[in-house]
Amino acid sequence: MQTEAKAFLQRIRAYPDDDAQRLIFADWLDEEGDPRGRFIRVQLALAELPPDAAARKVLAVVERDLLEAHREEWEAPLRRLASGCVFRRGFVDEINVGAKLFLRNADEIFEAAPVRHVHLLDVSEGLPDVLQCPYLSRLAALTIHASHTGEPLARAVARSEHLSGLRRLTLTRNRFADDAAEQLALSPNLANLEELDLSENEIGETGARALAASASLGKLRRLELRNNPLGPAGAEAVAGSDRLTALHRLGLSGCDVGLPRLLSLGRAHDLLRVPVLDLSGNDLTAYGLQAIIGHLPAGVSSEVRLTELDLSANETLGNAGAKMLADCPYLENLTVLRLANCGISDDGARALANGRHLERVTTLDLSTNPIDSNGFREFLNTRYWRSLRRLIPPRGISAQIYELLDRKFNRPARRG
Image (cartoon, rainbow, N blue to C red):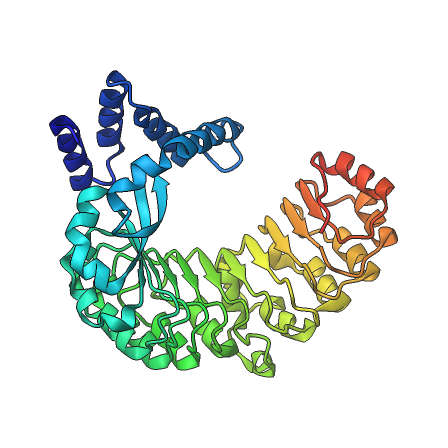
């Protein structure tokens, strides 16, 4: 590599979040006739565009063509060091690497690319040394999946001062129980986290309460707890936490929230304090839903921040649950409502179509429900749902109804 190129790369490694450094290098590459310059510009542009921007399609094609032509060359410095290279903002940003290899080759890895996200593999073979590697301080994101190590891994993560710069931490399927959650909750080294994913572990109510009481996780905007046995009280504690004040999304899919104990909770409505809430796959009944969205105590309605709600795969909700949603005055700010596979039939569809509190919903998913064309006709006649732009009905709706739905809601209704 030319001396000038090395100097540019050294600057990018020193300031990995500064796009200006990458653009300066792109200018130099353009002058050298190197297509990498265009690739850097394209990926930087894609990183700034919203997901639905029209320009994304054109830029994505250019990105794909450049990668197909040059990926092998651009990945070459990392070929024997790591796998699963993902390019972002013009450079390899994300890699997979075994814990022992990372310890042995970390200096070469970060010399080769401004890596910001590492998936550590086979961590059990390198604990606790790998979590004390100083090169971890260069990361913005760390993923450790399916190590099955349990509390020792959580303890090693919690005690690593080199993780204090992390913004995203994924620790999925590691056999974490309540003691592991407590280790993470007490760690001052995780104070800059914005996203934490603890899905597919064994964290129960005690662990959930520890996370809710954490003095170090106040910057969390996204917390994923999918497929942990939190139970309704654990879910209530996290959603109602006065410590997790920045929380924007809470993933509680498959967390046993729908257990009968939900009916006895005093503050189940705290779940409505989270703007984006996933309660899919929890065996919620209409009675359970009532405990969450039913009558709120005086003054509490002002705390409702819910804008996106996923209740999919709660087959026991049925028409009674649909009617409850349609009549709930606390859902007036809802923009996304997902009810796939909720046992809703024609009567439930009719009730939803006449839900006067759902005027701001832009996306409604009713896929995989036993609703036929008769049930959906009500959406064609409704005075409400003025904001709806995407209605996802189940299969079995007639072609005529599809065409009429397309016209009414301006965008094609997608088949479930």
